[in-house]
Amino acid sequence: MLNPKLKLNPKIFNDDVEQVPIRKGFGQGLLLAGEANENVVGLCADLTESTQMHLFADKFPNRFIQVGVAEQNLVTVASGMAAMGKIPFCSSYAMFSPGRNWEQIRTTIAYNDRKVIIVGSHSGISVGPDGGTHQALEDIALMRVMPNMDVLSPCDSIEAKKITIELAKTSKPAYLRLVREKTPIITTEETPVQIGKGEIYWMPDIGFAQVGIIATGGLVYNALLAAKELEQEGIKTKVMNLSSIKPIDSEAIIALAKECKAIVTVEEHQIAGGMGSAVAEILAQNFPVPIEFIGVHDKFGQSGTPKELVEHYGMGKNSIKEAVKKVSLRKI
Amino acid sequence: MSHLTDQKITELEKKANDIRISIIEMLVEAGSGHTAGPLGMADIFTLFYFHILRHDPKNPSLEERDRFVLSNGHICPVLYSTMAHAGYFPVEELKTLRKFGTRLQGHPHREYLPYVENSSGPLGSGLSQALGMALADKIDQKDKSRFVYCFMSDGEMDEGNTWEAIMLAGKHKLHNLIAVVDRNNIQIEGFTEDVMPLEPFHSKWKSFNWHVIEVSGHDFRSLNEVVEEAQAVYEKPTVIIAHTIPGKGVKEFERNYKWHGKAPNKEEGEMALKELRNNRF
Image (tube, rainbow over all chains, first blue to last red; front, side, top):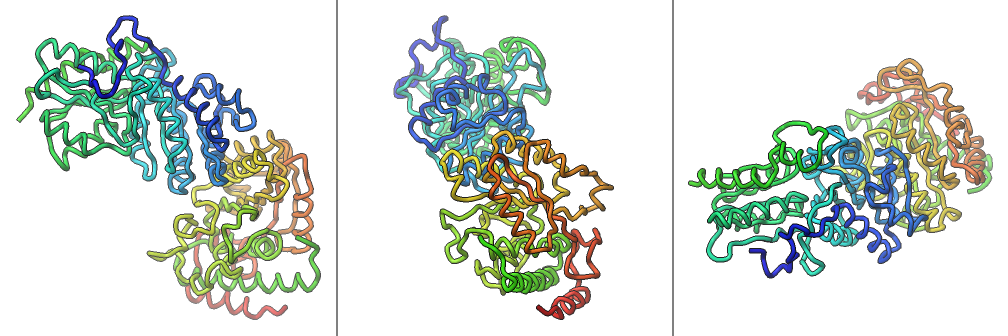
C-alpha cells in the first residue's frame, strides 16, 4: 500500500493519472523562488523553454542572463554572480551541463565554494528521439563524486517544484536532475520533502518487506508499479524514493536493508557510479546485503520513444520485478 | 584614483622592486612555482594595489571594494607578494608558499586565503567570473560605483571559455568590467605566436565589441592613464593589453620562456636578488 503518512497521490495507479514533466516543476519552483527572493537569478544556455526557465525569464527579464550555447560560460558566470550575493540557477541539458563544463563547475563552484544550482534537464534515456548524445546516463556519477556538491533527483513535478524552492534557501552548491518526458504525479502538495531524507512510498499492507526497492527520479513510478504487482503475487516489498542522492539518508537505507536483507536499486543512469553505487557503498560498509542494480548496463542510448527505450535498456516494470525475485534468491 | 606625481611614481617603482625581491625569495624557498609571469606583472600589480583599487587591506571584506579577479592563478607569487606588502598579511608568511598547511596555496584558494575573490588555477574561467560579478552589480545598479577588474594571461586565451566570456561581455556592454591581459608573448612550450598564434590580438577583442587599449606594462604613468581611460569608457567593456617583458627585473630571466614555470634555485636566486637589491630610486 502507499504510505498513508505521506499523503501521496491517491489516483497514482489510475489509467488516467495526471502526467507532468518533472522539468515543469522546476520551472514553476524557480518562478516562486524568484518571487520570494529578489537575489535569485537565472542563467541559461539557449534552452529556456526546454528547461522551463522561460517562466522565470519572462517574469524577471533583468534577472535572467542568456549566455547562448556556451555551457562553460554558463556556470562560471553564475559563480561570479554568486560571489556578489546572487542565488544563481543555471540550466541546460544534463549532457552539456554538467557534461561539458564539469571542470568549471568543480573549480569555480564546488572548490571555490560559490553557491550555484546547476540544473540538468533531459537526463536519462527518456529524452527519446534526440538519441544517445543527448541522453545523460553518467551525470549522477559525475556530480556525486564532486566534494561540496549536493545531488537531487525528484520523482515527479511536484517534488521538483518543492526541491527547487528549497535549493534557493540552502547554502551549498547543488545539482538538480530533471526529466524531459511527462511522468505520473506521485506526490501531492502535502507530501513532505526534505533534502537528505529518503522516504518509504510503498509498504506491505501487513508484515515485513522481503525486498527493499530504492528508486530515484522518473523511474520511481515503475518501481511502484512493480511493487503493486509483486504484492498481488505475494511478494512484499518496500519502495523508497531516494530523491536526495547527496546528502544521502544512510540511516534509512541501512534500516531498509536490515529489515529486508535484500535491495534493488532503480535509476535511469549507468549502473556504474550512480545512485545504486552510492547505496552499495553505504551497505558494504555498514550492513552488506545482496543488491541488484536496475539501470543502464554500460551502454550509450539511442533514438526511440521514452517508453520503448526504458523497456529496451532494462528499466521497465517487469525488469524491476525480475530483479526483486532474483535478489530474493540471493538472500543469505 | 588620481594623477601620478613624479614622487608617487618613484614610490611605486621602489615598491615594485620590493615586491620583485619578495617574489624571488619566496620562489627559492618554495622550490617550485612560476617566475616569469610574476616578475613581468609586478609593476601592474603594484600600481593596482597601491593606487588604483578601491580596497582596504585592514578591512578586506569592505563591501564597496572594487573586485579583483586573477584568472591566471599560477602567477600567484606576485599576487601574494603584493598583498603582503599592501598589508593583507605579514610579509614573513610569503616563505610558506606551496608548503603543507600554508594559506598560500600553489594556486590561490579562497578557502585558505579569504582575501582573494576567486580560487583559480585551471585557465580560462576568470573573465567569466568577473563578468558575473559585473552583471550582478549592473542588476543591483552598483555598476556606477565600482569596477570589476580581471587580470588574464595571453596564453590562457587559447581556452574557448575566454571567448565565450568576451562575447557575453560585449553583448551586455559591461562598462564596469575591465580586463588586463599580460601580453608577455610566452606560454609553457614557447612563444605564443609559435604555440598558438593570438595575432591579430587587438582586432580580435575589438570585433567582439570591446574597447581596446595597448600599453607598456612597465610604465606607471601610461598605465595609470589607460586605466583612467578604461574607467571612463561607458559604452563597452575595456581590455588593456599590457605589453610586458616576462621575467622583467632580472636580466638573466627576461624574455626567456623557460622561466615561465620554473623557480630559481639558490644560486640563481642569489644572482637575481643581488641585481634587484642594487637598484636605486
